[in-house]
Length: 106
Figure 1 (tube, one colour):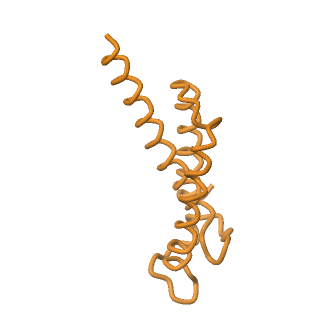
Figure 2 (figure 1 turned 180 degrees about the horizontal axis):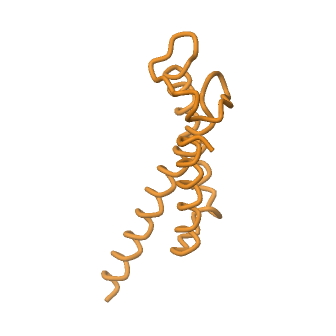
């Protein structure tokens, strides 16, 4: 498996595993999914512009990705990393927020 693809799969699985352990409940939250739609709405045009094959700014070594690009010329791995980054940030935020609420309740 190409390195970038492997790292994407590992990051997505790690985030899902952490969610199962922390139980923040974000995957069942409408706010989380609306956030992800907003993230993807910005990610697609920016990432599409950066990775367009006609005049790329960011170039991926073909041996490091699957080669599946959608939409435009975005490597699908970028969506996995985006998911992992945003989701882990929200999970950490939720966990820290709960901890501060518990401290305030004491």
